Image (cartoon, rainbow, N blue to C red; front, side, top):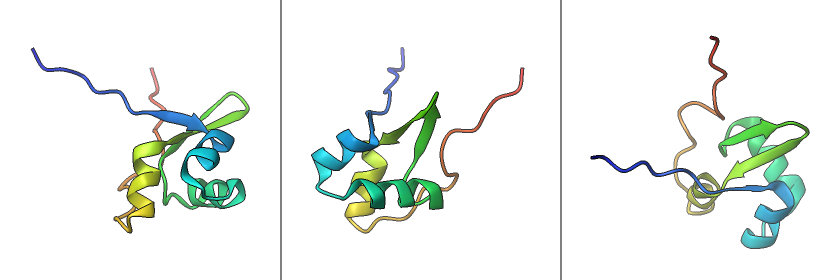
Length: 71
């Protein structure tokens, strides 16, 4: 059976505290699609793996954020 690996996410302020990147910059990166994120109510949750890849100079994600699925 294949194992499912869920992404580690954090609020912008938590991501800023863990990474040392200012919160305003993380907000910009999410808005530009450079870092994966998802809006959950009024909060924005940042994919920490995507933020780490950006910090390492990696390529931005192919599709920014998570797409809404219509049922």
